[in-house]
Image 1: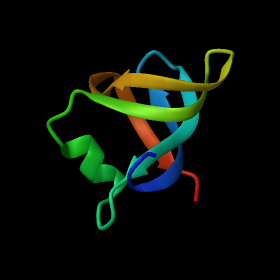
Image 2: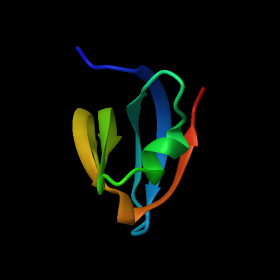
Image 3: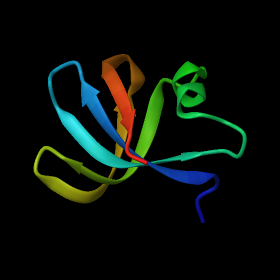
Amino acid sequence: MLEGNPKPVIIKLIDGTKARGTIFVFEGKRISDIIKNADKFIVLYNTSIAGLRDKTAILNKAQILYIIPED
């Protein structure tokens, strides 16, 4: 079981690719806390990206242009 609260998001990468999916945020934390931590990658679940659907994507945070929460 995944830990944290599921947060639906849209992520745009610097190459113009858009991904829609879910990230899990620990209680008391924000999406921005995930971006600020030392991990170089972010895991996006139930992802729709580049014609793929319902996949798990591991994205390099250095390639992220922006994240928009959907809720």
